[in-house]
Image: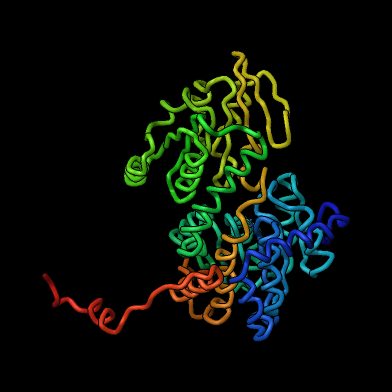
Length: 418
Ligand code: ADE
């Protein structure tokens, strides 16, 4: 397949959007500078399946300047910024296959177009590229030296593959770096999910009852931002420890069965399926708004909703109203896909700066060390994580103290007591 983007006429706008994002990505810029000088990725073929955004574009430029040939497709049918895709092709020589709103067939044909470039490194967000490679394009596996994975859902899938002994090459779990999930998942999704909900609906959040399903890093971020905007936030969780944490963070913890009839707004962030299922749909208030911030669009049971609906219509972009046979109206944002990317622009660049610094440094690590690694899921080395934190602090003009020699000694000793 040749390059496939929506409209090359958007390249100018895309270039400006990429430039604007770059201003908030100083850590990535410092890596780009070093990569351009040292070319650690010389002649490497990288196949990336990521949300095609201005932030991703900046990562692609780092890889390209490091010497890699890069092919890029979308990791979600609704997350592509068409102007950015056009700019990558027109101005930057990045083979890009992505259109906002592409259907499932196009989504997978774009993944296959990237695989056709015979990547030596895969860079995935959700593990669809890796799954396609392992199930349908196994003849390409011998070329692959390693991979990286951006998100919680993808890491969960990869761990399942490794546990079954089917993972064919080492993959670095970028998501698990502290400079990734503590900031991107929490503050990035927290802010951008609210941004997506507001852009789509123009809803006043103050005084609304918001139900957040899932209290992982993403759920924590969303719950805290919704509370900050004045919503009364209920949290639903299946695991006792995060549920307890939510309770002590000051949220009411309850079940979906109990929350369903109370919520004005629901946001799912569990990584699991049918979290708002048939029964919950049966109990929703008239006008309830449903949004998803988890990786896949299966957290809201859209099939059950469709079955209960007499008709449906688009009220505004990314706002679809289902009129149920009993007369209630239920509103779904962004087709139940990641609301922050479908209806807004995804995480702000300042946070993707750290996530994508982890990506770039993990690729460099795989090139240097890949041959010594097993077919397992690896963490980002701690020293890279700390290096990124230091660079980010420096870019934010924040200084930190160092231990004195006495304190360093004290921290290692066990003899001093009361
Ligand atoms: N995931 C969440 N937000 C993103 C963004 N802005 N760019 C790429 N991937 C993302």
